Length: 430
Image 1 (cartoon, rainbow, N blue to C red):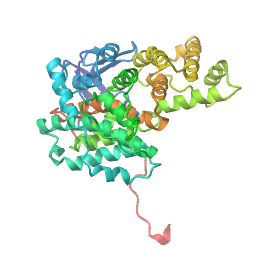
Image 2 (tube, helix red, strand yellow):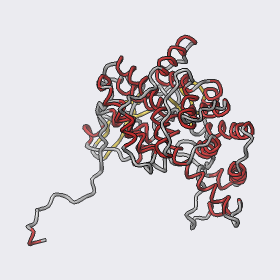
Image 3 (spheres, rainbow, N blue to C red):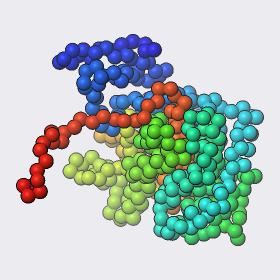
Image 4 (cartoon, one colour):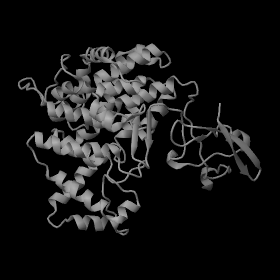
């Protein structure tokens, strides 16, 4: 039931529309009867003003710089939780108690092995294949080993499929990396934690299996949590859109990976590193010069990692990463000149009214790439790491959508601007 109504006046009459209130944030005007009643549709490129579902997973207040997962602030979640705790929270709506967490971790660790036939799947890719192409293809491929999870309306199978996908994704991601560098695949160790196991499969090999630095585990855990969910973004909307056709969870998530791979979405942190590196390598580049270029309307130069589609304030995830980046580098006894450049550039931008007036603050991509570099990952793996973190958010949205009785197959409308009906000419008359 709606809480109130709104009236839309048109030339050919008016229509009364239901208004739904949210717990926090903007209310929504229900326009589902608009086309049938008035013959009109709404026009909203990018769907920036369109709510496609009720959701209880994540809330963003872009003006205040607040990000909540099931009501908990991201700053607290990132500092106090393990990644699997956050995955549980997103999927089931509550933080697990000690017993629930131990059972959850045990069930995940028990399913980290891939079917041995998957080795030939990875072997079939050329070494130059981008790890994201391997990752999304493998995610689709493993669904062929689990036919029982293809029925998205059975709640028990949805739950089991979620565990399977979360458990196997670190192995898929690590093997995609190993394929790209020509090293042997490393099998998972069920005695290790989720994040430590992923780092071990990524960086060890059969003749060198050194313990993983706990500082790296802590940093990777935090980075995965900060990427775990971000409301109805492009890739999440893609997962929901594909899933609305009753496509299985594996296929829907693989589609989300394709959306995330784009440079305007998950590839943005790589663009930040490329830009910082170019500033570092150019002896004539100066911070004031970069700021001046960014403000010049006649220059196509843009400061990468500044501004966000949702936030008109500082991205809270960026604050967490920035504070943690130096701690990680110090503990690893390693310096990164790109971090110094990033901080100097940020300070100069935030001190300039031009950026404040336009709400151009650092976003999560601004510092995440620096930490990924510090952990030893090449640029081509950055989006893979983003994917590994975003996985529980995608699954949570897919589960919520499939259990929502109001879900309908996604079918946006259009405003047609092509030719009206016309006669078909014979070929000799064209």
